[in-house]
Length: 389
Ligand SMILES: Nc1nc2c(ncn2[C@@H]2O[C@H](COP(=O)(O)OP(=O)(O)OP(=O)(O)O)[C@@H](O)[C@H]2O)c(=O)[nH]1
Image (cartoon, rainbow, N blue to C red; front, side):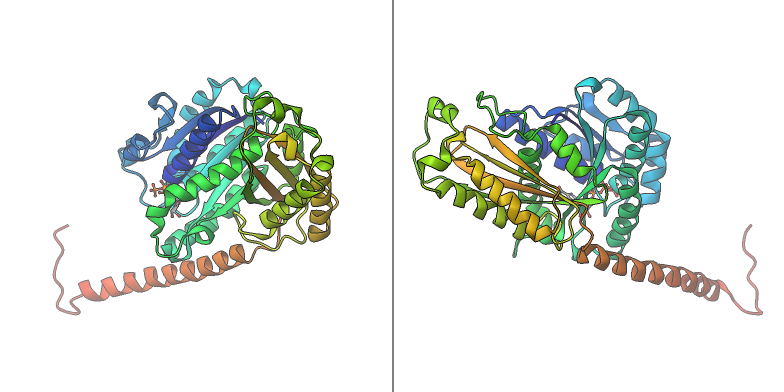
């Protein structure tokens, strides 16, 4: 599936940078182009895979290239004011080659949180291709303002995109590692999941042909549920020397050849992917749609395994709309990606909203009491001191 990526804010830019890095290393060609949008000049300078010619600095007259300091209302405002610059860069893209747009942002800050829904709304207005969002939720300990920003942006973003894929930083932190230090590896993990999913059907340049292809329309139909999505992933290294291209391309005989090993490997991988750590932890039963992609050398991609895994996922989720297929790649790993779309039982979102409501209430009360306290402080009672003007 061919994507145009638009990363907004620092997290958005860095995640898009990581996806482009994955795409180049794997030679999968699923990224048609990538654009970074920011209010902070220094954030744009840090990007390695998005050249200056694909970067847009918005809000320059208002914030002078210094970011919006976690004020997402200002982020939305300045992005709306300068959205024409973003759209004219999108206009330069070969849009006829694109299957969908993916707008990426961290929802806890200011620029991405406010700007991503604005850009998504404009893209949807102009183009007929689907516009998907990828929203990163802040970790629990980032504080109330980040949580409130994320809750407000989430409400808005989910309405402006055809589907919002969610990634929760909190579920991905490693013990003993600060989140800042861990962003590099977290972004790489996220890029791998999205990379395997979106490059399915594009091939990896080895010329291998899939038995039952996962093409762009399978992904689009899965995401057509709307609402929000989560992605699971699991992989295993094959215990054998890497085979030559010829044997990889021969493929297709996995079930007969290894007495069911390939079938079992795939079913257990898909279970691990769906029941292990999802990009957004949630209850998978009740998901509206699902897609299973199994990537690996063709001679171990068991069609029976994929069928069984699909049936298992139908039982677990309670939906018949589980699509699936294989994705032959020249690798010594077998990987399964499970995309669950239209998930509604998500305790993390409910918790985020509860903290956001509490924060909003506290902030309003504080603002009112601060105004009264300042009046108190300044007032000199009956002995009035005249202000200068
Ligand atoms: N996964 C991931 N999350 C990040 C990364 N950088 C920041 N975040 C998250 O994204 C949130 C938003 O931060 P930024 O993207 O830095 O904010 P911004 O959109 O640039 O907005 P301002 O800095 O306020 O102008 C943070 O609260 C973190 O939760 C990253 O590299 N990877």
